[in-house]
Length: 104
Length: 174
Image (cartoon, rainbow over all chains, first blue to last red; front, side, top):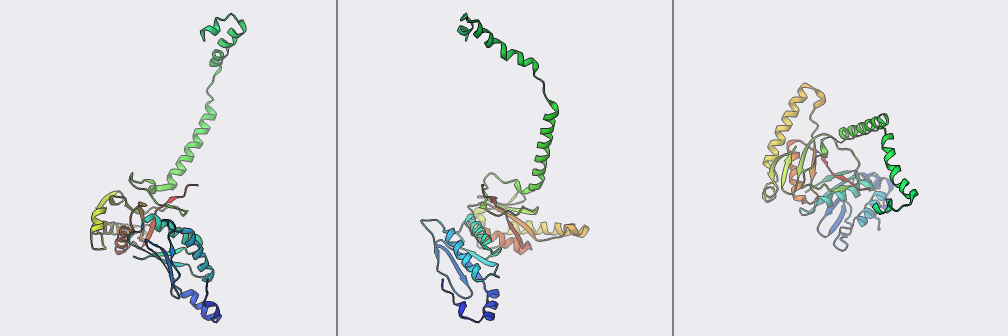
């Protein structure tokens, strides 16, 4: 994964790590993660099913990059089923983002 | 069987009739150990029953989503969303079809009922501080409901002041 933050001075990136906002949107196509710094490529559905393993991998990468971050905003499409939302919440919690808010 | 008894073989004859009959008279019910077992069972069931609380009661047409969460449920008011109805503490308030077709985000019936509940809780809090309004509410939704409905219910709860929303889920089968 490309990391732009490494070249920056340590103090500045530390501040950034606290201020980063993590948004996870769920659409019919799959998941997409955005932070206040950059957009990550979509995690597309695999053979019609949501790719929760891919999501977990992506989230744990993010956790390594922003160890202090524990908040995530989840924004599902209106057609997304409750079970999918709960599984996404599970993935977030297991990886280390226990504070989630849901936005509509 | 009859042919076996009449076969003329004395050994066969005896073993067949004797053994099962005699045992019957020797049988004694051991009450002490049985009472022990039942007492333990009773205590076990009672403990389980109180720990789970009210949240155990689910409607027939409601399947909770499966999750790996392990936090125990707490006793709050419960908003239930089944495939057809939205209920608060078991009282049906809004048909799901109507709620989905409505343009407005706020569900009026739900709003009024929750507001009444909040006022009730707050007047109880005047009598005893332990009953204070904490803004906690549990949402028990069917796994199939779309986010659209969940969003409206959550928004309505938030408007009344129930901002601490707990989502009820079923625990993963081991």
